[in-house]
Image (cartoon, rainbow over all chains, first blue to last red; front, side, top):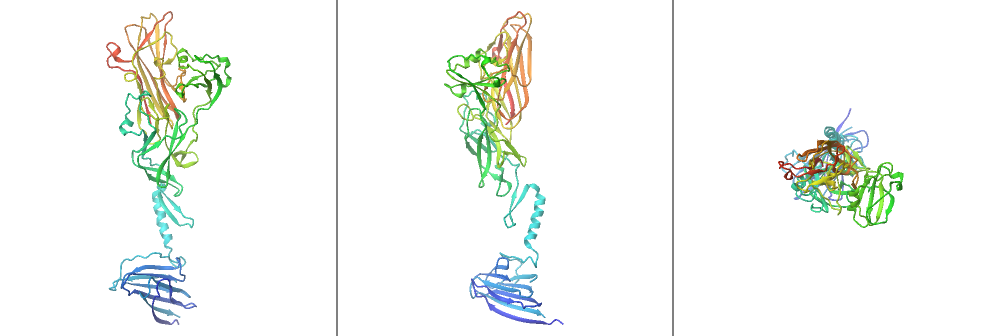
Length: 104
Length: 457
Protein backbone atom coordinates (compact mmCIF):
# COMPACT_ATOMS: atom_id res chain seq x y z
CA UNK A 1 0.00 0.00 0.00
CA UNK A 2 1.47 3.40 -1.04
CA UNK A 3 2.72 5.57 1.75
CA UNK A 4 2.67 9.40 1.64
CA UNK A 5 5.44 11.26 3.40
CA UNK A 6 6.03 15.01 3.41
CA UNK A 7 8.93 17.39 3.81
CA UNK A 8 9.67 21.11 4.06
CA UNK A 9 12.88 22.75 2.87
CA UNK A 10 13.92 26.43 2.93
CA UNK A 11 16.76 28.60 1.70
CA UNK A 12 17.88 31.83 0.09
CA UNK A 13 19.06 31.99 -3.48
CA UNK A 14 22.76 32.67 -3.80
CA UNK A 15 22.38 35.42 -6.36
CA UNK A 16 23.37 36.38 -9.87
CA UNK A 17 25.38 33.88 -11.79
CA UNK A 18 24.57 30.96 -9.54
CA UNK A 19 21.84 28.43 -10.15
CA UNK A 20 20.90 26.80 -6.87
CA UNK A 21 19.46 23.31 -6.84
CA UNK A 22 16.13 23.55 -5.10
CA UNK A 23 15.09 19.92 -5.17
CA UNK A 24 16.00 16.63 -6.79
CA UNK A 25 13.42 13.88 -6.99
CA UNK A 26 14.36 10.48 -5.78
CA UNK A 27 15.57 7.79 -8.13
CA UNK A 28 13.00 5.10 -8.69
CA UNK A 29 9.33 5.09 -9.50
CA UNK A 30 8.31 7.67 -6.92
CA UNK A 31 6.07 10.61 -7.87
CA UNK A 32 6.62 13.80 -5.96
CA UNK A 33 4.24 16.76 -5.68
CA UNK A 34 6.42 19.85 -5.36
CA UNK A 35 5.22 23.20 -4.06
CA UNK A 36 7.85 25.90 -3.97
CA UNK A 37 7.36 29.52 -3.08
CA UNK A 38 9.84 32.25 -3.96
CA UNK A 39 9.56 35.58 -2.16
CA UNK A 40 11.47 38.77 -2.86
CA UNK A 41 12.19 40.19 0.56
CA UNK A 42 14.67 42.80 -0.65
CA UNK A 43 13.90 46.49 -1.13
CA UNK A 44 14.41 46.29 -4.88
CA UNK A 45 12.83 44.48 -7.79
CA UNK A 46 14.59 41.22 -8.56
CA UNK A 47 14.48 38.78 -11.40
CA UNK A 48 13.82 35.13 -10.74
CA UNK A 49 14.60 32.33 -13.15
CA UNK A 50 13.59 28.71 -12.65
CA UNK A 51 14.68 25.70 -14.65
CA UNK A 52 13.73 22.05 -14.64
CA UNK A 53 16.29 19.36 -15.41
CA UNK A 54 18.59 21.59 -17.47
CA UNK A 55 19.86 25.14 -17.07
CA UNK A 56 19.15 26.09 -20.68
CA UNK A 57 16.55 27.86 -22.72
CA UNK A 58 14.80 24.56 -23.21
CA UNK A 59 14.72 23.80 -19.49
CA UNK A 60 13.65 27.21 -18.26
CA UNK A 61 10.07 27.33 -16.99
CA UNK A 62 10.02 30.81 -15.52
CA UNK A 63 11.69 34.16 -15.94
CA UNK A 64 9.83 36.75 -13.91
CA UNK A 65 10.40 40.12 -12.32
CA UNK A 66 9.30 40.29 -8.68
CA UNK A 67 8.74 43.61 -6.97
CA UNK A 68 9.46 43.98 -3.28
CA UNK A 69 7.27 41.63 -1.29
CA UNK A 70 5.94 39.75 -4.32
CA UNK A 71 5.88 35.97 -4.36
CA UNK A 72 5.54 33.27 -6.93
CA UNK A 73 4.33 29.74 -6.25
CA UNK A 74 5.11 26.85 -8.53
CA UNK A 75 3.26 23.56 -8.25
CA UNK A 76 4.78 20.79 -10.23
CA UNK A 77 4.69 17.01 -10.31
CA UNK A 78 8.13 15.45 -10.50
CA UNK A 79 9.06 12.10 -11.86
CA UNK A 80 12.18 10.13 -10.97
CA UNK A 81 15.40 12.18 -10.93
CA UNK A 82 13.73 15.47 -12.00
CA UNK A 83 15.65 18.49 -10.76
CA UNK A 84 14.65 22.12 -10.15
CA UNK A 85 17.15 24.96 -10.31
CA UNK A 86 16.62 28.64 -9.49
CA UNK A 87 18.59 31.85 -9.74
CA UNK A 88 18.01 35.35 -8.37
CA UNK A 89 19.41 38.45 -10.05
CA UNK A 90 21.05 39.54 -6.79
CA UNK A 91 22.11 38.01 -3.51
CA UNK A 92 20.11 38.19 -0.29
CA UNK A 93 16.90 38.96 -2.08
CA UNK A 94 14.82 35.90 -2.80
CA UNK A 95 13.96 33.26 -0.25
CA UNK A 96 12.38 29.99 -1.13
CA UNK A 97 10.23 27.51 0.75
CA UNK A 98 9.51 24.06 -0.60
CA UNK A 99 6.97 21.50 0.47
CA UNK A 100 6.71 18.13 -1.15
CA UNK A 101 4.66 15.04 -0.77
CA UNK A 102 6.27 11.77 -1.73
CA UNK A 103 4.23 8.73 -2.64
CA UNK A 104 6.20 5.49 -2.12
CA UNK B 1 7.94 16.09 -14.74
CA UNK B 2 4.34 16.54 -15.79
CA UNK B 3 2.03 19.54 -15.62
CA UNK B 4 2.72 22.44 -13.35
CA UNK B 5 1.14 25.63 -12.12
CA UNK B 6 2.57 29.04 -11.41
CA UNK B 7 0.92 31.62 -9.20
CA UNK B 8 2.19 35.09 -8.37
CA UNK B 9 1.28 37.11 -5.26
CA UNK B 10 1.86 40.76 -4.55
CA UNK B 11 3.43 42.09 -1.34
CA UNK B 12 0.04 42.00 0.38
CA UNK B 13 -0.39 38.35 -0.40
CA UNK B 14 -3.09 39.00 -3.02
CA UNK B 15 -2.94 36.68 -6.00
CA UNK B 16 -2.20 38.54 -9.21
CA UNK B 17 -4.58 37.90 -12.08
CA UNK B 18 -1.92 38.64 -14.66
CA UNK B 19 1.82 38.65 -14.80
CA UNK B 20 4.46 38.45 -17.47
CA UNK B 21 7.28 36.08 -17.95
CA UNK B 22 9.85 35.75 -20.67
CA UNK B 23 11.80 32.84 -21.98
CA UNK B 24 9.18 30.34 -20.92
CA UNK B 25 9.84 27.05 -22.63
CA UNK B 26 7.63 24.04 -22.13
CA UNK B 27 8.95 20.52 -22.36
CA UNK B 28 7.28 19.12 -25.45
CA UNK B 29 7.59 15.56 -24.14
CA UNK B 30 5.23 16.15 -21.24
CA UNK B 31 3.16 19.21 -21.81
CA UNK B 32 1.29 20.81 -24.65
CA UNK B 33 3.64 22.34 -27.13
CA UNK B 34 2.73 25.99 -26.98
CA UNK B 35 4.54 26.90 -30.20
CA UNK B 36 2.58 24.25 -32.06
CA UNK B 37 -0.61 25.73 -30.72
CA UNK B 38 0.48 29.14 -31.94
CA UNK B 39 1.34 27.65 -35.31
CA UNK B 40 -2.15 26.18 -35.51
CA UNK B 41 -3.69 29.57 -34.95
CA UNK B 42 -1.34 31.18 -37.47
CA UNK B 43 -2.27 28.50 -39.99
CA UNK B 44 -5.93 29.27 -39.42
CA UNK B 45 -5.16 32.92 -40.05
CA UNK B 46 -3.35 32.15 -43.28
CA UNK B 47 -6.17 29.93 -44.46
CA UNK B 48 -8.50 32.87 -44.03
CA UNK B 49 -6.21 35.34 -45.74
CA UNK B 50 -5.46 33.03 -48.66
CA UNK B 51 -2.83 34.37 -51.04
CA UNK B 52 -2.95 37.81 -49.45
CA UNK B 53 -0.39 36.68 -46.90
CA UNK B 54 2.61 34.38 -46.88
CA UNK B 55 4.57 32.63 -44.15
CA UNK B 56 8.31 32.65 -43.95
CA UNK B 57 10.40 30.26 -41.86
CA UNK B 58 13.96 30.43 -40.65
CA UNK B 59 16.47 27.63 -41.05
CA UNK B 60 15.33 26.00 -37.81
CA UNK B 61 11.81 25.72 -39.17
CA UNK B 62 10.36 28.34 -36.89
CA UNK B 63 7.88 30.88 -38.18
CA UNK B 64 9.91 33.99 -38.88
CA UNK B 65 7.64 36.50 -40.57
CA UNK B 66 4.11 37.05 -41.62
CA UNK B 67 3.98 39.19 -44.76
CA UNK B 68 1.11 40.60 -46.73
CA UNK B 69 1.29 39.55 -50.37
CA UNK B 70 0.25 42.42 -52.65
CA UNK B 71 1.26 41.98 -56.29
CA UNK B 72 -1.85 43.88 -57.32
CA UNK B 73 -1.10 47.16 -55.56
CA UNK B 74 0.22 49.84 -57.92
CA UNK B 75 -0.41 53.28 -56.52
CA UNK B 76 1.72 55.44 -58.81
CA UNK B 77 1.77 56.98 -62.25
CA UNK B 78 4.58 58.12 -64.52
CA UNK B 79 4.53 61.63 -65.92
CA UNK B 80 6.54 64.72 -66.64
CA UNK B 81 8.25 66.40 -63.67
CA UNK B 82 5.57 69.08 -63.65
CA UNK B 83 2.21 69.57 -62.01
CA UNK B 84 -0.43 66.93 -62.58
CA UNK B 85 -2.65 69.41 -64.42
CA UNK B 86 -0.05 69.81 -67.10
CA UNK B 87 0.41 66.08 -67.37
CA UNK B 88 -3.23 65.17 -67.77
CA UNK B 89 -4.26 68.02 -70.04
CA UNK B 90 -1.40 68.84 -72.38
CA UNK B 91 -1.71 72.16 -74.08
CA UNK B 92 -2.67 72.13 -77.74
CA UNK B 93 0.32 74.16 -78.76
CA UNK B 94 2.87 71.63 -77.61
CA UNK B 95 3.15 69.62 -80.80
CA UNK B 96 6.19 71.31 -82.18
CA UNK B 97 9.45 69.99 -80.86
CA UNK B 98 11.16 73.33 -80.63
CA UNK B 99 8.36 74.96 -78.64
CA UNK B 100 7.45 71.97 -76.48
CA UNK B 101 8.95 71.71 -73.05
CA UNK B 102 11.26 68.77 -72.59
CA UNK B 103 12.79 67.30 -69.47
CA UNK B 104 15.77 65.33 -68.33
CA UNK B 105 13.78 63.38 -65.72
CA UNK B 106 10.55 61.44 -65.57
CA UNK B 107 8.37 61.59 -62.46
CA UNK B 108 6.73 58.72 -60.56
CA UNK B 109 4.01 60.14 -58.34
CA UNK B 110 1.39 58.74 -55.97
CA UNK B 111 -1.89 58.47 -57.88
CA UNK B 112 -4.33 56.04 -56.29
CA UNK B 113 -2.02 55.63 -53.28
CA UNK B 114 1.62 55.87 -52.23
CA UNK B 115 2.04 52.10 -52.06
CA UNK B 116 3.34 49.62 -54.63
CA UNK B 117 3.61 45.86 -54.12
CA UNK B 118 7.14 44.69 -54.93
CA UNK B 119 8.63 41.22 -54.73
CA UNK B 120 11.14 40.72 -51.92
CA UNK B 121 13.13 37.49 -51.80
CA UNK B 122 13.70 37.92 -48.07
CA UNK B 123 10.05 37.47 -47.36
CA UNK B 124 9.15 35.45 -50.44
CA UNK B 125 6.23 37.80 -51.01
CA UNK B 126 5.04 40.93 -52.79
CA UNK B 127 5.61 43.45 -50.03
CA UNK B 128 3.49 46.62 -49.95
CA UNK B 129 6.13 49.33 -50.14
CA UNK B 130 5.51 53.03 -49.65
CA UNK B 131 7.04 55.63 -51.93
CA UNK B 132 7.03 59.37 -52.38
CA UNK B 133 7.16 61.46 -55.52
CA UNK B 134 10.39 60.60 -57.30
CA UNK B 135 12.10 62.22 -60.30
CA UNK B 136 13.94 59.51 -62.21
CA UNK B 137 17.01 60.48 -64.20
CA UNK B 138 17.08 59.38 -67.84
CA UNK B 139 19.52 56.49 -68.00
CA UNK B 140 19.90 54.06 -70.88
CA UNK B 141 18.91 56.53 -73.59
CA UNK B 142 20.60 55.10 -76.65
CA UNK B 143 18.75 56.80 -79.47
CA UNK B 144 15.94 59.21 -80.17
CA UNK B 145 12.51 57.57 -80.20
CA UNK B 146 13.92 54.33 -78.80
CA UNK B 147 11.62 53.03 -76.03
CA UNK B 148 12.98 52.61 -72.51
CA UNK B 149 11.27 50.38 -69.94
CA UNK B 150 11.04 51.41 -66.30
CA UNK B 151 11.06 48.82 -63.51
CA UNK B 152 10.46 49.39 -59.80
CA UNK B 153 12.15 47.30 -57.12
CA UNK B 154 12.87 47.27 -53.41
CA UNK B 155 16.15 48.44 -51.96
CA UNK B 156 15.87 47.85 -48.25
CA UNK B 157 12.40 49.17 -47.60
CA UNK B 158 12.58 51.86 -50.29
CA UNK B 159 11.33 51.92 -53.87
CA UNK B 160 13.99 52.50 -56.51
CA UNK B 161 13.87 52.38 -60.28
CA UNK B 162 15.74 50.68 -63.09
CA UNK B 163 15.69 51.86 -66.70
CA UNK B 164 16.36 49.54 -69.62
CA UNK B 165 16.46 50.75 -73.23
CA UNK B 166 15.14 48.62 -76.06
CA UNK B 167 17.44 47.23 -78.73
CA UNK B 168 18.26 49.70 -81.46
CA UNK B 169 16.78 48.63 -84.80
CA UNK B 170 19.07 46.03 -86.33
CA UNK B 171 20.39 47.35 -89.57
CA UNK B 172 22.27 45.89 -92.48
CA UNK B 173 24.63 47.97 -94.53
CA UNK B 174 23.76 48.53 -98.17
CA UNK B 175 25.97 51.22 -99.56
CA UNK B 176 27.74 54.47 -98.85
CA UNK B 177 26.68 57.88 -99.98
CA UNK B 178 29.68 59.57 -101.48
CA UNK B 179 28.27 62.42 -103.51
CA UNK B 180 26.59 65.46 -102.06
CA UNK B 181 23.15 66.43 -103.25
CA UNK B 182 19.95 64.60 -104.08
CA UNK B 183 20.15 60.86 -103.76
CA UNK B 184 19.41 58.92 -106.91
CA UNK B 185 19.54 55.23 -106.59
CA UNK B 186 19.07 52.36 -108.97
CA UNK B 187 16.93 49.58 -107.60
CA UNK B 188 18.98 46.95 -109.37
CA UNK B 189 21.93 47.88 -107.22
CA UNK B 190 20.24 46.83 -104.01
CA UNK B 191 20.54 43.40 -102.60
CA UNK B 192 17.54 41.10 -102.60
CA UNK B 193 17.84 40.83 -98.81
CA UNK B 194 16.55 44.38 -98.55
CA UNK B 195 13.35 43.74 -100.50
CA UNK B 196 10.33 44.76 -98.53
CA UNK B 197 12.43 46.24 -95.77
CA UNK B 198 12.64 49.76 -94.53
CA UNK B 199 15.67 51.62 -95.67
CA UNK B 200 17.52 54.07 -93.50
CA UNK B 201 19.55 56.75 -95.15
CA UNK B 202 21.94 58.21 -92.64
CA UNK B 203 23.58 61.47 -93.34
CA UNK B 204 26.86 61.63 -91.50
CA UNK B 205 27.01 65.38 -91.58
CA UNK B 206 23.76 65.90 -89.69
CA UNK B 207 22.10 64.73 -86.54
CA UNK B 208 19.74 61.80 -86.29
CA UNK B 209 16.77 64.07 -86.81
CA UNK B 210 17.67 64.13 -90.47
CA UNK B 211 17.77 60.38 -90.86
CA UNK B 212 14.89 59.21 -92.90
CA UNK B 213 13.43 55.79 -93.54
CA UNK B 214 11.90 54.54 -96.73
CA UNK B 215 10.00 51.40 -97.49
CA UNK B 216 11.72 49.28 -100.04
CA UNK B 217 9.18 47.34 -102.01
CA UNK B 218 9.65 43.98 -103.60
CA UNK B 219 11.53 44.00 -106.94
CA UNK B 220 14.19 46.26 -105.53
CA UNK B 221 12.66 49.58 -106.35
CA UNK B 222 13.01 52.64 -104.19
CA UNK B 223 9.93 53.87 -105.93
CA UNK B 224 8.73 55.94 -103.02
CA UNK B 225 11.60 58.33 -103.19
CA UNK B 226 9.69 61.12 -104.79
CA UNK B 227 10.91 64.61 -105.40
CA UNK B 228 9.81 66.05 -102.13
CA UNK B 229 11.58 63.32 -100.27
CA UNK B 230 14.72 63.98 -102.18
CA UNK B 231 14.66 67.49 -100.91
CA UNK B 232 14.91 66.13 -97.38
CA UNK B 233 17.91 64.12 -98.32
CA UNK B 234 20.37 66.75 -99.27
CA UNK B 235 23.10 64.53 -97.92
CA UNK B 236 26.73 65.35 -98.04
CA UNK B 237 27.68 61.79 -97.32
CA UNK B 238 26.60 58.83 -95.24
CA UNK B 239 25.27 55.34 -95.54
CA UNK B 240 22.19 53.51 -96.67
CA UNK B 241 21.11 50.57 -94.55
CA UNK B 242 17.93 48.60 -94.16
CA UNK B 243 16.16 47.61 -90.98
CA UNK B 244 15.70 43.90 -90.59
CA UNK B 245 12.85 43.88 -88.10
CA UNK B 246 10.78 46.04 -85.84
CA UNK B 247 12.04 47.10 -82.46
CA UNK B 248 12.47 44.53 -79.71
CA UNK B 249 13.04 44.76 -76.00
CA UNK B 250 16.53 44.19 -74.70
CA UNK B 251 14.92 41.99 -72.03
CA UNK B 252 11.43 40.66 -72.55
CA UNK B 253 8.60 41.08 -70.08
CA UNK B 254 7.26 38.00 -68.30
CA UNK B 255 4.26 37.61 -66.03
CA UNK B 256 5.05 36.41 -62.51
CA UNK B 257 2.03 35.95 -60.25
CA UNK B 258 0.09 37.73 -62.97
CA UNK B 259 2.33 40.78 -62.89
CA UNK B 260 4.53 41.97 -65.76
CA UNK B 261 8.18 41.83 -64.69
CA UNK B 262 11.60 41.82 -66.24
CA UNK B 263 12.17 38.31 -67.56
CA UNK B 264 13.95 36.08 -65.00
CA UNK B 265 13.84 38.83 -62.38
CA UNK B 266 10.67 38.88 -60.33
CA UNK B 267 12.02 41.69 -58.18
CA UNK B 268 11.79 44.14 -61.12
CA UNK B 269 8.17 45.11 -61.59
CA UNK B 270 7.38 46.71 -64.95
CA UNK B 271 5.66 50.06 -64.43
CA UNK B 272 5.91 51.74 -67.83
CA UNK B 273 7.82 52.81 -70.91
CA UNK B 274 8.97 56.14 -72.27
CA UNK B 275 11.06 57.45 -75.12
CA UNK B 276 13.07 60.57 -75.73
CA UNK B 277 13.27 63.16 -78.46
CA UNK B 278 16.14 64.23 -80.66
CA UNK B 279 17.85 65.88 -77.69
CA UNK B 280 17.54 62.79 -75.46
CA UNK B 281 14.85 64.53 -73.40
CA UNK B 282 11.37 63.33 -72.59
CA UNK B 283 8.22 65.07 -73.80
CA UNK B 284 4.54 64.46 -73.24
CA UNK B 285 2.34 66.62 -75.43
CA UNK B 286 -0.61 66.15 -77.73
CA UNK B 287 1.62 65.36 -80.70
CA UNK B 288 4.37 63.67 -78.70
CA UNK B 289 3.00 61.17 -76.23
CA UNK B 290 6.28 59.80 -74.98
CA UNK B 291 5.21 58.38 -71.58
CA UNK B 292 3.26 55.14 -71.17
CA UNK B 293 2.00 53.77 -67.86
CA UNK B 294 1.56 50.06 -67.21
CA UNK B 295 -0.86 50.86 -64.38
CA UNK B 296 -3.41 53.54 -63.63
CA UNK B 297 -3.71 54.30 -67.32
CA UNK B 298 -6.01 57.05 -68.53
CA UNK B 299 -7.54 57.52 -71.93
CA UNK B 300 -5.77 60.70 -73.01
CA UNK B 301 -5.89 62.58 -76.30
CA UNK B 302 -3.32 62.95 -79.04
CA UNK B 303 -3.72 65.55 -81.73
CA UNK B 304 -2.23 67.56 -84.53
CA UNK B 305 -4.78 70.28 -84.99
CA UNK B 306 -4.46 72.67 -87.88
CA UNK B 307 -6.10 75.56 -86.14
CA UNK B 308 -3.42 75.67 -83.51
CA UNK B 309 -0.40 74.35 -85.34
CA UNK B 310 -0.39 74.81 -89.10
CA UNK B 311 -1.30 77.90 -91.04
CA UNK B 312 -1.99 78.51 -94.70
CA UNK B 313 -3.60 76.32 -97.35
CA UNK B 314 -1.91 73.89 -99.66
CA UNK B 315 -2.32 72.56 -103.16
CA UNK B 316 -2.65 68.97 -104.22
CA UNK B 317 -1.50 68.38 -107.79
CA UNK B 318 -3.66 66.50 -110.27
CA UNK B 319 -3.58 62.73 -109.95
CA UNK B 320 -1.45 62.98 -106.88
CA UNK B 321 -0.59 59.57 -105.49
CA UNK B 322 -0.58 59.02 -101.72
CA UNK B 323 1.52 61.49 -99.86
CA UNK B 324 1.53 63.05 -96.39
CA UNK B 325 -1.13 65.66 -95.79
CA UNK B 326 0.18 68.97 -97.08
CA UNK B 327 3.12 66.88 -98.20
CA UNK B 328 4.58 67.57 -94.79
CA UNK B 329 5.85 64.77 -92.60
CA UNK B 330 5.52 66.99 -89.57
CA UNK B 331 1.76 66.39 -89.64
CA UNK B 332 1.92 63.47 -87.33
CA UNK B 333 1.58 62.23 -83.79
CA UNK B 334 4.43 60.34 -82.15
CA UNK B 335 3.75 57.95 -79.31
CA UNK B 336 5.07 54.92 -77.45
CA UNK B 337 3.20 52.03 -75.81
CA UNK B 338 4.73 49.32 -73.66
CA UNK B 339 1.86 46.83 -73.90
CA UNK B 340 -0.68 46.16 -76.67
CA UNK B 341 -3.25 48.93 -76.77
CA UNK B 342 -6.24 50.06 -78.79
CA UNK B 343 -5.29 53.12 -80.83
CA UNK B 344 -8.01 55.37 -82.20
CA UNK B 345 -7.49 58.32 -84.51
CA UNK B 346 -9.37 60.33 -87.09
CA UNK B 347 -8.42 62.91 -89.65
CA UNK B 348 -10.61 65.65 -91.06
CA UNK B 349 -9.95 68.13 -93.82
CA UNK B 350 -11.92 70.39 -96.12
CA UNK B 351 -11.05 70.57 -99.81
CA UNK B 352 -12.12 72.84 -102.63
CA UNK B 353 -11.44 72.18 -106.34
CA UNK B 354 -9.82 74.95 -108.29
CA UNK B 355 -11.93 74.56 -111.42
CA UNK B 356 -15.03 72.86 -112.69
CA UNK B 357 -14.39 69.28 -113.63
CA UNK B 358 -16.81 67.83 -116.13
CA UNK B 359 -16.16 64.29 -115.01
CA UNK B 360 -15.82 62.58 -111.69
CA UNK B 361 -12.80 63.30 -109.55
CA UNK B 362 -12.00 61.82 -106.20
CA UNK B 363 -10.02 62.96 -103.28
CA UNK B 364 -9.02 60.49 -100.60
CA UNK B 365 -7.62 60.79 -97.15
CA UNK B 366 -6.31 58.02 -94.94
CA UNK B 367 -4.20 57.41 -91.89
CA UNK B 368 -0.99 55.43 -91.84
CA UNK B 369 0.69 54.05 -88.80
CA UNK B 370 4.36 53.17 -88.76
CA UNK B 371 6.04 50.80 -86.37
CA UNK B 372 9.58 51.93 -86.94
CA UNK B 373 11.86 54.20 -85.06
CA UNK B 374 12.72 56.29 -88.03
CA UNK B 375 10.61 58.58 -90.12
CA UNK B 376 8.40 56.59 -92.44
CA UNK B 377 7.50 58.02 -95.78
CA UNK B 378 5.90 55.22 -97.77
CA UNK B 379 2.42 56.61 -97.93
CA UNK B 380 1.20 53.74 -100.07
CA UNK B 381 1.39 51.49 -97.03
CA UNK B 382 -1.88 52.21 -95.32
CA UNK B 383 -2.86 50.59 -92.09
CA UNK B 384 -6.34 50.72 -90.70
CA UNK B 385 -9.54 52.07 -92.12
CA UNK B 386 -9.62 54.45 -95.04
CA UNK B 387 -12.49 56.61 -96.16
CA UNK B 388 -12.45 58.12 -99.63
CA UNK B 389 -14.31 61.30 -100.35
CA UNK B 390 -15.47 61.43 -103.97
CA UNK B 391 -16.91 64.50 -105.58
CA UNK B 392 -17.47 66.27 -108.85
CA UNK B 393 -15.08 69.12 -108.97
CA UNK B 394 -16.72 72.46 -108.55
CA UNK B 395 -14.69 75.56 -107.96
CA UNK B 396 -17.28 77.12 -105.72
CA UNK B 397 -17.90 74.22 -103.32
CA UNK B 398 -16.03 72.72 -100.44
CA UNK B 399 -15.83 69.04 -99.73
CA UNK B 400 -15.31 67.36 -96.42
CA UNK B 401 -13.00 64.38 -96.19
CA UNK B 402 -12.46 62.11 -93.23
CA UNK B 403 -10.33 59.10 -92.38
CA UNK B 404 -10.39 56.87 -89.32
CA UNK B 405 -8.13 54.41 -87.57
CA UNK B 406 -9.11 51.99 -84.82
CA UNK B 407 -6.79 49.05 -84.24
CA UNK B 408 -5.07 47.05 -81.52
CA UNK B 409 -1.36 47.66 -81.79
CA UNK B 410 1.52 45.84 -80.15
CA UNK B 411 4.17 47.41 -77.93
CA UNK B 412 6.55 49.79 -79.65
CA UNK B 413 7.08 53.33 -80.82
CA UNK B 414 4.80 54.69 -83.50
CA UNK B 415 3.62 57.68 -85.34
CA UNK B 416 0.35 58.35 -87.07
CA UNK B 417 0.37 60.14 -90.39
CA UNK B 418 -2.62 61.55 -92.25
CA UNK B 419 -2.19 61.10 -95.98
CA UNK B 420 -4.03 62.37 -99.06
CA UNK B 421 -4.37 61.61 -102.75
CA UNK B 422 -6.34 62.85 -105.74
CA UNK B 423 -7.68 61.08 -108.80
CA UNK B 424 -8.92 63.22 -111.65
CA UNK B 425 -11.37 62.04 -114.31
CA UNK B 426 -10.23 61.30 -117.86
CA UNK B 427 -9.12 64.30 -119.79
CA UNK B 428 -9.11 66.64 -116.86
CA UNK B 429 -6.34 68.39 -115.05
CA UNK B 430 -7.85 69.88 -111.98
CA UNK B 431 -5.90 71.28 -109.11
CA UNK B 432 -7.51 70.72 -105.76
CA UNK B 433 -7.00 73.17 -102.98
CA UNK B 434 -7.18 72.07 -99.45
CA UNK B 435 -8.50 74.31 -96.76
CA UNK B 436 -7.95 73.44 -93.18
CA UNK B 437 -8.97 76.52 -91.33
CA UNK B 438 -12.64 77.40 -91.15
CA UNK B 439 -11.88 81.08 -91.35
CA UNK B 440 -10.49 80.60 -94.82
CA UNK B 441 -13.60 78.93 -96.19
CA UNK B 442 -16.53 81.21 -96.97
CA UNK B 443 -19.52 80.60 -94.74
CA UNK B 444 -17.57 78.05 -92.69
CA UNK B 445 -16.30 79.92 -89.73
CA UNK B 446 -16.11 77.41 -86.97
CA UNK B 447 -14.71 74.33 -88.57
CA UNK B 448 -11.19 73.13 -87.97
CA UNK B 449 -9.52 70.06 -89.38
CA UNK B 450 -6.58 67.97 -88.37
CA UNK B 451 -5.60 64.73 -86.73
CA UNK B 452 -7.07 63.72 -83.38
CA UNK B 453 -6.93 60.45 -81.50
CA UNK B 454 -6.68 58.83 -78.13
CA UNK B 455 -5.37 55.78 -76.33
CA UNK B 456 -4.75 54.63 -72.80
CA UNK B 457 -1.43 55.59 -71.35
